[in-house]
Image (cartoon, rainbow, N blue to C red; front, side, top):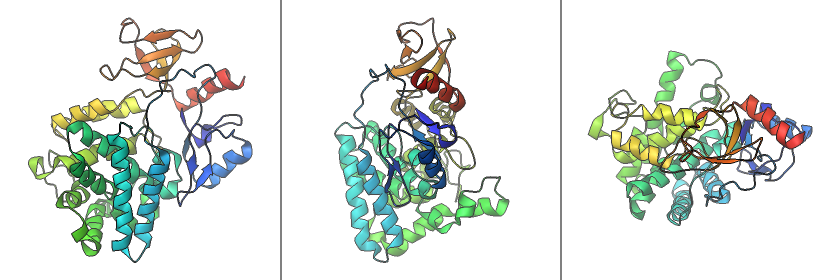
Length: 359
């Protein structure tokens, strides 16, 4: 269960490691949180962490997920590329890490969770880029791309926000509404990133990867930026990266807004078909995302609180639930009289975890 750091209390245990500015581990999986640890997370600008579910819920579906150390190495390679003067040499390491992510996904791993949600705010752009890269490759595999095209998609996606390195942090992380001038600066980041790549390693990149960097904010109906192009002027690869970008950004805690629950982000993106994106790409997205991931706490139409223990890929909104009070398992794909009303808010999730774990 992902919780904002502001909702943590002593006694909760981390179910995923937490990473700092250089990709270093701040706290490992299984650590029991203390007041000191929680204060340290706040000082390091960590916005959210993932904590263990309640006792008795060890029957959660075990998924083959992408190894975090693979993603951490990839994030370090991007950080090093930005900082080094020898960008051509360092880029080889970036490609090697995208290849590792691709091979993991080809082997059956899925990009569950995200680095952006468990890293510091200072490193958000880089962690977010790794998450977008991994999910884009996963969507690309579902789309039918072979390994060579998956690598092009992954390289473009891992570099998609590179231009934000040229935008002042006070604009990127501004808590309030951006001014028109600040928004225009943000809208320039695809061009900034494209120019950085053209100036340094253009001969090491495919046209497909470069086009992803330049066009990942363009939209099917012409409402995007920086050039306002539309329809078939935008490649499917750029749109796949864009969908990954939107979903990861929406479901990640930020300094200026709370994270959307996955089901709300899912439902919103589903309205974009043949408007912001081709309908078939929206359908592709819907087949790759679980609106109620394993370990999500939900309120049922019966008034009971349950935990998602298994997903039903063909019926995304009807997973298998374990009721907290009784321990009863309910397969919503069979028990049609029961529905999920909503996922619990962070405040509700916190009190629920306290009640069932720490009382």
